[in-house]
Image (cartoon, rainbow, N blue to C red; front, top):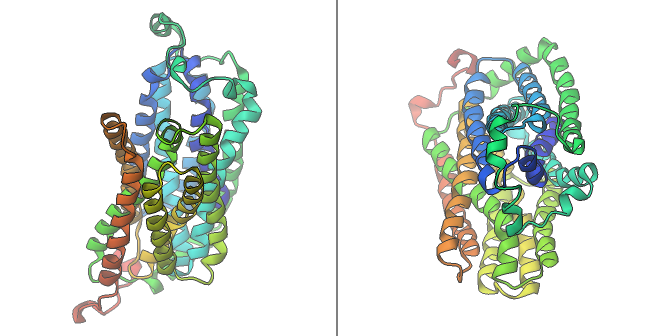
Length: 426
């Protein structure tokens, strides 16, 4: 499952460094092709909902293997798309399979280890972060100078030629790209995910795995007094947390160059140190989770996020403070999501639908908050809107977690204290 999430991180993050090459492949400019992000995000939401239902009634390994096969096919076809329509459709299909895989990985960790799975949950999400970190390096090695030579400024939004739309309409749906290095970048990731899927299918043929899971689940089932309220609050918690994480990672480069007056090389380094400390701290969290409770890790993360975002707002033009606070902010954001999943499992059993509900909250934050901040920042270019949003999200998550903890630790009513076997509930 760790290897699967490594491939998931590669598959999600490879779009960024190859976006310009894909746009050139379908003879469109970047600004007119931004719908592929909407298509992938919509597919991810649908996949999360579908996965939440299917994982409650199908074998986990079978469904994960099938979603990985679909991801492999999508990765091989995407660089072959010669028209924008086919590319957007394939991105939606890829997003659906990724959504199923993302939901399934979290469910499987909870099913195998339950409330003892905090280190395993941290390693799962470290695999995703590691894949996202390696994807740009892979693209640079595969595509050579074609990625780095392009300037990500206004001219990139004006090419290819203006007659591209008429030529794109007459182009075939699929065909080999002009630059085969683009194909090999996606093909390498697809081949890796396919190899991992073979091992996932091998686990499916272990007939005892399903029986062991049912046995463990029947013994470990629990339900908090305010189960649905907890899920809704955690949905909102993840909405703001993931929204702030993606917003800062997406806008810190433009903020550093336009507002803080940094050179592009310095701004790129600031962006890299955010994701670098993010991935490094997720790796270290595997060991911390063995000796710290998930709730403790969430509190420490909230304190770090609140302190670092406050310093970012107060000293938003001080280069040294930006470097230090960005490093602390990236490290503080790293463990919150996997710790939150592990924490809620200590108090109430998370089914497939519940896990999908939480993943959807995170996905909606990923979609909505960066888009809103982009619009607001355009209206108020003289204000550090990105930093304000991060501070606001840090305050909200720091306030809501004590409420979550209080609700989770309330004792059950007398009529609810009798345990209900998980298998009979199904």
